[in-house]
Amino acid sequence: MSTRSASLRALRIPQHLGLALTLASLGIACSSSDSSGTNQGSGGTAAGGAGSGGLAGTSGGTSATSGGASLGGAMGTGGLQGSIGGASLGGAMGSGGATGSGGSAVGGAAAGGTAAGGAESGGRTGRGGQSAGGMSAGGATQGGATGEGGAAQGGTTAEGGSSEAGGAATEGRSAGCDQEPTIPSSQYNNGQHISIQVGNMQRRYILNVPNNYDNTHAYRLVIAYHELNGNDNEMYANDYYHLLPLSNDSAIFVAPNGQQNGSPCTGTGTGEGGCGWPNPNNTDIDLADAVVAQIEENFCVDTNRIFATGWSYGGSMSYKTACERPLGADNGFVRAIAVYSGSQLSGNCTPSHPVAYYASHGTHDSVLCYDSTSSSSGEACQVGNGVSLFENFANANGCTYQVPTKVTSGPHVCTELSGCTDGYPTEFCSFNGDHTPDPSDGGQSWEYQTAWDFLSQF
Image (tube, helix red, strand yellow):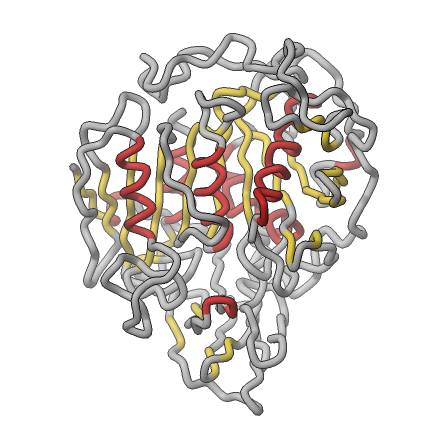
């Protein structure tokens, strides 16, 4: 096991995120973070117990919790995000654009857009039977011969493989390689919603492809899951957790949109109250299957290098997707994930196949527990914790498990386990902070560069 100081890995990122999020379903209040990483304690002003909608200014904004009711507070530069009744579930993450940009919503096109893939295009067999336009004709496919790239052309090496960078010794090429996409160019790189039928729900996602996209080159694919009260518009606005500019046109990015109360989220603003990833009956996993299949059908994807990332509820969905759809397993496609302050909110799952795993978590997280010994209320954690998720994948990855170093003060510390199956590194970064997607060391953001360094090694 190796431990590395944050001072060697810090990078200043100009776009800062800070968000107050309360999981009403868990009855946990959340402290929020301003752009400098200063946490505001509970006990803010309340009006009859209702959250008062924190103000976010050009400096990133500050917000506070109020009793048990969280004050909304949009992250970063995103104007005002009011709380909902007495149990606000936080605000939207910031736009990720230039700070001080105001609160204009990005991706304001109405939900639905042009239904690219509304007509089924055969999909990819072996991906849960999802076609590019939703469920394939007649329900689940029978797993017949896949088309070009259906199961990665070039194949997927056995678990562990022989590749230094992770089990996939060869490049996988999807059906979209050497083909012109049927999704029109007006539907991507601009925040437009792409509609997709999944089961009995009309879902949607936002897509970015490299500016110099070449259909003869196979690209990484990154799935960015938003947090509770976020949405696909928000992911587009903040450049998919700020990974898009770091990728230097080496990856395709997609932001699926969540659901609430058994219905798809349809908001057109940046963030939507209650929108998350409850994943009833794996319906959000079905969405992931369908989105990946549609993108593989239309664009040239390296099917051995598909990743997922997300914060809070989005981190939970990233964990669930990796657990349910690991590359090398039947219907699997996830090679590596980056989980920020996650838990098991999208359905419990214990991984049985390796997936390269990066995680970060604040030691004072007041929403989702850091480990089994800590919660803001002193009560036992009800939905798992950051360290236990890390341990689950450490076991699946064949690592020699040791509890990662827990920071008590000072900069973050990252622990990389030893003995892991070749190509499946397993790393956990502990930081001295609350529930935030943008931890910093003395004002220096480090999260996103660290995550991209981890994912891009594959």
